[in-house]
Image 1 (spheres, rainbow, N blue to C red):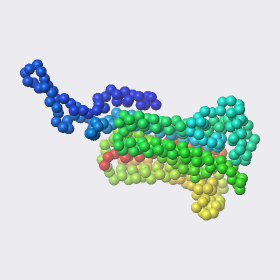
Image 2: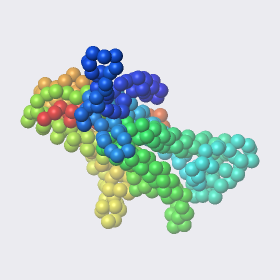
Image 3: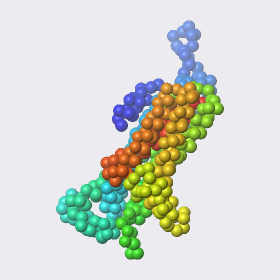
Amino acid sequence: MQRLILPPLKALTGSQGLRLLVPRAAPRAQCGCSCGIRHPLRPGQYSTISEVALQSGRGTMTLPSKAAERVVGRWLLVCSGTVAGAVILGGVTRLTESGLSMVDWHLIKEMKPPTSQEEWEAEFQRYQQFPEFKILNHDMTLAEFKFIWYMEYSHRMWGRLVGLAYILPAAYFWRKGWLSRSMKGRVLALCGLVCFQGLLGWYMVKSGLEEKPDSHDIPRVSQYRLAAHLGSALVLYCASLWTSLSLLLPQHKLPETRQLLRLRRFAHGTAGAFVAGLDAGLVYNSFPKMGESWIPEDLFTFSPILRNVFENPTMVQFDHRILGIASVTAITALYFLSRRIPLPRRTRVAAVTLLALAYTQAGLGISTLLMYVPTPLAATHQSGSLALLSSALWLMNELRRIPK
C-alpha cells in the first residue's frame, strides 16, 4: 500500500501545482531609480494558471490536480483489493462452516481473542448453548472449535481493516482538499456502505443463532440475508474498482461508431448476466445433466412456485448452471464482436482476459461439482467469480472511455 500511495504523495508535496492561488505581485517598475514599485494584479489574475480555484470570503481552496487524482485512484484500488479479500475469506468461512462460531458481536471487545484455557472454555460453553452445536457439532472438541472460531475471527478482523482502509484515508484526503465535490459524494457513500456491511454481517449471523423448535434441519444463516451481505459487498467492490479505474486509466481517443455502441450495450448485458449467477447451492454432483435428466423433477417442490427460486436447492443450482452457460456464450460472442472493431490495444487485452477467465471459471465450476465440493477448489471457484467480475468492469470501463 505504501508503494502505491507514497510516490504520488511525494509528487504532490513537491509540486507547484498544489499551491494555493494567491494574487501575484507585479514586477518592479522600471522607473530608473533604486526603489521599485509593485503594482497589484487586476482582479482574477493568479500566480498559477494550471489550477482552478474557488473564491470565498474566508480564503481560496484549490480543487484536486491530476497528481491528487492518481493518489485517490490508487487508494480506492487498494480498498477494492481489501474488499475482494473479505469476500474470498467470507467464502472460505462459509465453506468450512465457521460462520456461527462467534455467538456475539462487539466492535472493540471482540478484537482481543481468548488467551488462557479458562477463556477458551468459557467461549466454547457459550457456543454450546446454540443450535449449531446441539444439532450438528455436539461431539466437537475444543481444538476443533478453536479452528472454526479463528476462521470467523479472521473474517471479522479483516472487515475492520476494510473499514479503516476506507475511513482514515478518506478523512485525510478530505481535509487536504484533494476530493472534488462529486468525489466527496462518492467517498461518503462508500464509507457509509462499509459501515452498513458490518451491521448487515451480524444481522446475517444472528439468523443462524435463532432457536427453531419446529425444525430439525442443520442450522444455517438465512439465504436472503446471506445474499444481501454478499450483494452489498459486491456493490462496494464494483463502485470502488470502477472509480479507481476511471481515475487511473488514461482516456482513449477514438470516434464513436454504431458498431462500438452495439459492443458497449452487449458488454453491459453480459456483465449483468453472470453477476446474477455468482452464488448458488449444490445438490447434483454431475454435469452436464443433473442426475439422470436434463431437467430434474424436483424443480418445483415448494409451494407457492416463486418460493422455489429462492429456497429450493435444486432450482437454485439449475438457475446457476443456466446463467453460467449463458454467460460463457455471451462473453464468447462479445469477444468475436470486439475483433471486428478497431479498438486500442488495452481494450483488446481486457476482452481477451474476460474470455479466458470465463472459460477458466466454467472449468472450475464443473470440477467443483464432479469432485463433491472440496474446500480449496470451491474457494478457488468463488475467487474466480470475483476475478471475472473485475475483468468485466475493466472492459466496460475501457469502452466507456472512448469519447463520443
